[in-house]
Image (cartoon, rainbow, N blue to C red; front, side):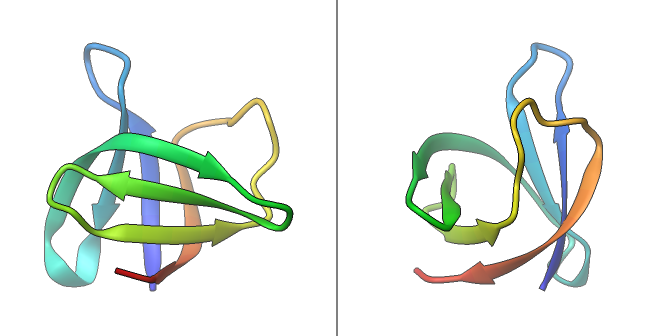
Length: 67
């Protein structure tokens, strides 16, 4: 699914899922060998591959929901 990553007014990373009309703050980030896993405030876990540091935001990326 396509998601947009951005920072909110206080500087926290936020994920917006347009198809679900869902906007949630990222509460945890885990980096594996090939992807980053973002845990959202609502409990969803999204895997995003190919992100480079530092993040240039806002950015639309392909994510896979894993939980």
